[in-house]
Image 1 (cartoon, rainbow, N blue to C red):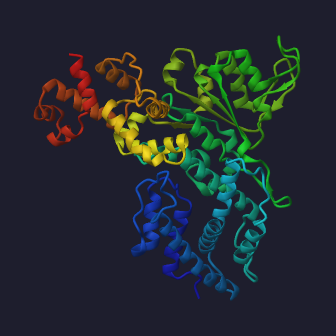
Image 2 (image 1 turned 180 degrees about the horizontal axis):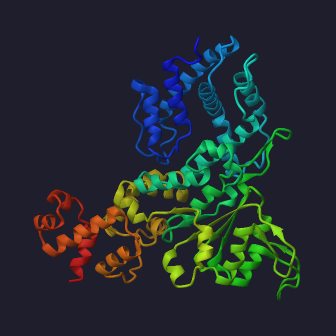
Image 3 (image 1 turned 90 degrees about the vertical axis):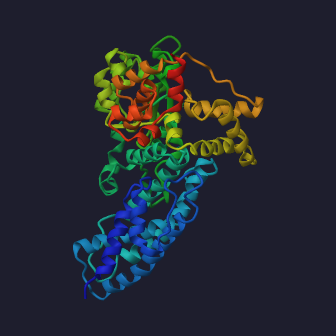
Length: 514
């Protein structure tokens, strides 16, 4: 008797692919479709802040879990009867068991995350690990069969807790259903787990703290939220003796805004100091690099504003993982992870000498770029309502839904759908508050670059996406020719395509500049 028949093998192969995919990429939908066939229900294209617990997403997952719950006892019975799986079959069986264990415990693990985030509990005891261990033994330590896994249950329990934390933080910190928002969530997920979750689980979970993450993007686009999602989602080991995790994740993220402090104070905050190291150093003091434990994260905001002399010292930390307090010669070891952020054009900053090249090349192994609000709304205008809902819920609580339509109507009618939101999400938040208080918002009208100069700079600096480049070039050609047909002829494109690419806001700017 074969351990897996062809139908079971096909199902379990698809299940394995689904289990290890990036949940914020559309591949998850295709894997669900493979698994369920005619029972598949089409979910929303990209999850939004209201989406993950709504049908049909939950319905698809429930059906998949039911099939796994039906199949695994049958396979376990074959093992007890002496049927020996091949290596590939044993791996598929293991993956199916891991899938089932995760979905049997994820609600309780997620509840623990929510309590910790809300400050209701610290590092609580996870008494139900004993139940997890029993289920593990039941499926993976089958009497008479050879060992079915090389993994330890405590390690998988820790990985499952990390997945629950990561999903919640990525999902609730990065809101929106546009393609740019979805790509950002997927990119952050990879910054936590890499693109290969098997390899992460087996090896890289130990090494991700050594890899610095650099978050780039315009001011107000949520770079610190991205950093928090990554920093609060790091791997934390589980101790089976105490039934607790080695760290309380909610207290492992330490943020420092470098642009708000003078260089001497930045050094003291980072490295700590010895008593008498400088005027005002009245006692020994630990810096964030020392306070931060192995599972912790130091977030350095506005890294582009860091004095080059301090960059040299921080470069040494990134290279050797060691540092010294100010006024000391004793070597101390940094065990945590560094996440940095900047709104500067890093290429221009290096050319201008504000950012050392050797320092940048120690930061750039993992780069996450946050898109502008204007880019997100161009891709998906409906995202404005989603963001307003999210902001108003945090601002007023109950009754937020009643205000969304009013605020949205004011923005569309007064600022117009083409408003470019130079302050990004941060500006949108303040706009919402101003409309609530004064029934109006007056955006600052900083002098903008002429449209053509801005276009040239975007090409020169390489900051335009292919879509932005095409949209602006079509608009410019239409402006110069005054005709869709002539613009299409010069561009070698269809007239309807040119018309669909016209940026009305840019066209207005070009006409005003005449």
